[in-house]
Image (tube, rainbow, N blue to C red; front, side, top):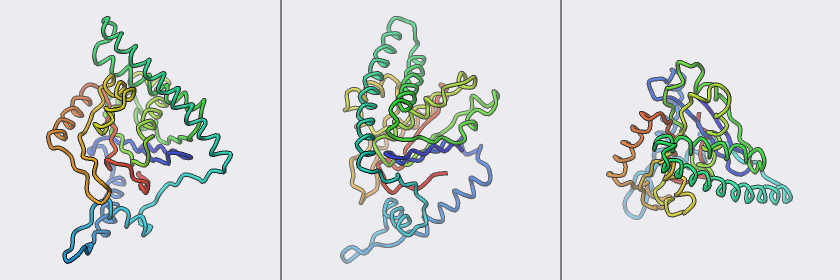
Length: 275
């Protein structure tokens, strides 16, 4: 597996792994242990005269509070360090969105004049914006990104075309940015030429944000329609949207992309460590 942990601000953990058929016995055993831990947290909640089963989010919180799920916590920052980090974050985001928007417009123009095909436009956009996210992080390090095991993605030329699924817990609005920064960090060296760029599944409401939506559409990312529900109830998805998402994920893998998902579907400040 590939593990990437962000510290300071985001505090997110990301894992990349191949499809199920590539899992080894140790990974399967770990998944079984995590499932057993989750099942042991199932309980009935008394509400009025009746009872109901707890939601997955409630069972997760109960397991976290009981200490059955390990967590990675961002360290506390002093007052001066907080000011510096915020200044770096605002500067980073301003530069990132400006450069990303120009990149998207350039990619669209190159497709219109016939330099790029539709597929080349998507891949070039993802790779370039990933590099922007990674390089700017070196210039304005408002959070620290640790990546371990990236050599497992393409350890040999024969394995460069195998698809990889990236899975992350969802702890902040920066998680998609973390995906892009990891994408940029991997796009270097001889092996990067055959590496698959990553497409991620995102909440369709993000299309309402002008600059962000330009990137999502230029890179042809994969939307999912989900109701804006509270933490006390399970996520609600439109069946037609789920079917469309699965179809587009399958097409993306065939077109040479990896897939990144946030399976929680909403932010979870008490997310467990994956891996």
